[in-house]
Amino acid sequence: MKKILFVCVENAGRSQMAEAFFKKYMPKGFEVISAGTKPSSEVNSIVLQAMNEIGIDIKNQTPKHISQQIISESEKAVNMGCIDKESCPALFMKDVLDWQIPDPKGKSIEEVRKIRDQIKTKVIILIKSLEEND
Image (cartoon, rainbow, N blue to C red; front, side, top):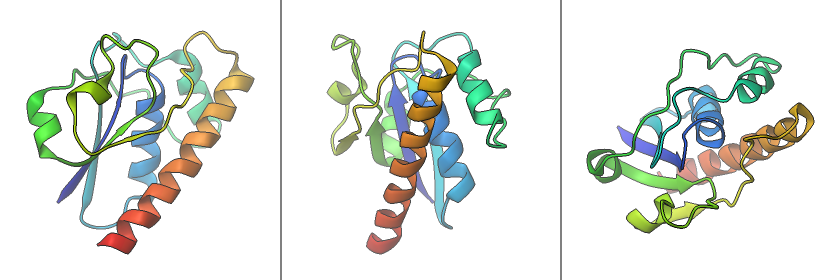
C-alpha cells in the first residue's frame, strides 16, 4: 500500500478535508492519513459543516500529530500551506507538494466552501497523476 500524507499545522481543516476527499476517490493500492505539527483538539466546526453539505461526514476524525514514522512511511506528502514558518510541515519533509491553500480557521462558511471545493479539485488532480505514474 502506498500512503499519501496531507499535512497542515493544526490538522483541523484543510488536511482533514483533503484526507476525506482522497478516501472518497482513492484508487486501489493507496491509503491516506493527515496530520499536523501543532494539532488542534478537534476538527474545525465550520469545516465539518461544509463537508456535511456535500455528504461527507468527518465528525469522528481527530487531529493527529505528525511523527517521523508517518513521514517515513509516506509515498507522497502534500503540504496544505503554512502561515507559521516555525512549524511549517514542509520544512521536515522531502518530495513535498505545496498547495498553498488558505486556512479555513476563522473564515465564514462561504469562504470555507470555496476552500473545500479548491481542495476537492486538487485531490482529484493528484489522484489522476498517481494513477498515471502507477
